[in-house]
Amino acid sequence: MTKEEVIEVIKRNIVENLDDVEADSIDPTKSMKEYGANSLDMIEVVSTSMRELNIKIPRSELAELGNIDELADKFMEYINKG
Amino acid sequence: MKAEENVPVRWHLDDNGVAELMMCDREHNNLFTDSFIDAFLGALSEIEKERPICLLISGLPDVFSGGADKETLLDLCDGKIVVKDLEISERLVAAPFPIVSAMQGHAVGGGLVIGLCSDVMVLARESRYGAVFMNLGFTPGMGTTELLPMAFGPFIASEMMLGGRTFRGGELAERGVPVNAIVPKADVYRRARRIALQIADKPVDSVYLLKYTLSSEKRKRLIDARRNEDLMHRITFAMPETRRRISEQYNE
Image (cartoon, each protein chain N blue to C red):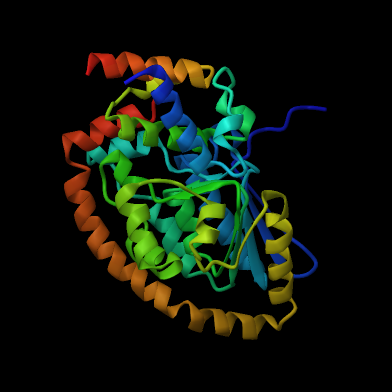
């Protein structure tokens, strides 16, 4: 799986979990917060995406990530470990 | 201005006969710490003495309540303590006055149960609500297994309890969850207070009589729930996986 595909998964889950956000308008260099996500929204987006990608990442490793791109990198790391 | 001391719960009674209880433990985000539970139950006792016509419960703008705290859950795994938060649901369901919950912020686990024990529930479109117990490996408590299906409908309640996902208020509204209102966050308090004032307009004795009658089903269901939930807790809190999940999930 490519990083672009991983970003698509994340984007789709952002759209499903937030009001009034379109996938095309999401810039991966930004944080989900900029699209109106609160802490529990982010947990849902991340956990749904991880389930879809069939990976499990400890929360402590996710806490320090700053934007969607970094989240995708972290996902890739675990997908490649798979 | 001097920084205000962190008081977990405040309350006052207004001229209309509406008591307002505000959960404002910013330091712990209204988690059920020992001091929070003591303050909450203490405030309820004081409020009962004042015989308000109605009680309005609100939380912080972003968090209504997150339910049990990590220490309590780990102590439960060790079998060290009795479950104190159960008393919250019992006291709320047995309250002589109607309760209106203005749930502006997130409410998960036991935090959601405060709303379920109320007579009127107003949720925010933007906030999230969930019965997340099973994410931590243990079965739902505080009466959730009976009160949630009763309030939200059996299928959505099952999805919430078995899946452990939190739902945005807006999504619950789309699914037709029959609470009193699911409105933009900024309108939650006003909407809830308006309902409280409508209730407070009636004679207190009549309100108390009707409340007692209307709450009889919930009181019965809570007794049934406790029996099953206690048994399930004895099993699920003793599982090593539960302890592991609690330690991981509450990673700050």
